[in-house]
Length: 237
Length: 251
Image 1 (cartoon, each protein chain N blue to C red):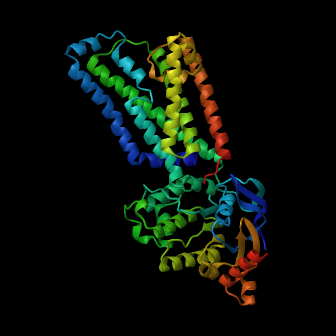
Image 2: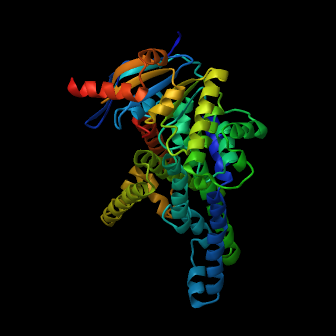
Image 3: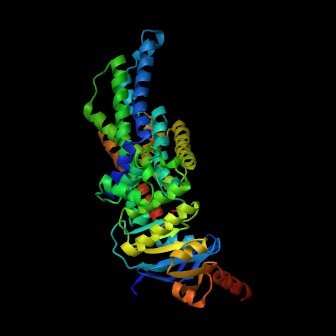
């Protein structure tokens, strides 16, 4: 398999807190990599490091991808949208910012794809959207640049059951149809289990275990049980 | 960088902040002119009207201060735009998309400086026109005025390059205004104290941007020198901004 992301001893220290410590991980092209760990384990920091939102304290990473603008997209923690603009104007701004000449119809199509068809013609500003709508708008914004790699930090957070299903279907569709590689961190392990092709378990900033979906199924254990087993293992180590 | 700048300008031109600034741009000169119209035929009007230095010209020169009514509102409204990129987390979209941090900072700084030049110049010209129409125009040395305009606008750019740097460091409107205006006032106080001892002129030459609240006019040579000193400060603060932004975490 072709390696898309490779980190080498990647470390991030915030003042006196070690958020990520000597992380060595790889993500292959076409994978949906599920990133699992307790609160404060370092999942979000890894995503922030890979997207250049924060600078590494030491170590490095490599993303083997065309360096064109918009080829990497991410949703990190809170949806990053312009609250004063409506959904369509957010899309127009993002397209302009990326230097892409997208027609309004193309942008509307993306909004429909993420299930925001109801707000296309509304003047309702993004600040008045529900969290689920904001999440979906963020996904639409991420898709404008036709990215090959998308990083999602807790994408199911704040979504209702229907929203979760739509998000899951969208991720699977984009992975299968457009061969987009995903790195997804989530606390909802049962949901992650429905989309991920490989898992990475992180604890206290360190990658402690990686396993593919197939290997996990061979073991005939649920992802939740497997995760708890690992956590217990660390405690007793 | 140009794509970010174009997108930001486009968004700004459609925003309520832009509309508010346009209203203020016309409202303040009109209000001031109306006030002069009211007092024109009174004893106070006689005193103001006898001003040897030409009221319209002096109003023009004083218009560039970030401490006057329009100057302060321009500062606050532009900070809402700059800091809004951090509070909405939208600055992350730019870095995630693959733009270098230097381009992100450069586009933001350029946007700020363009907005400042356009609004400050428009406000000064409108003030000059409105006051002149009420109180009358006097002959001016256009060459000298243009040079002095360049000195004032370069001073304002220095102040805003510093404010922009602070905005990226603090990511907060309150802290940026507090530290920015606080520093400006502190230096002004030092200049005033030293001015009493006859050394104020020297400090104005070291920090020409402090002359923003003054209507003093210098010789051609002096003005050119002060503009060059301002450009050095502008380069220094912008350079510091690029450096700090590269080290910064967009948490």
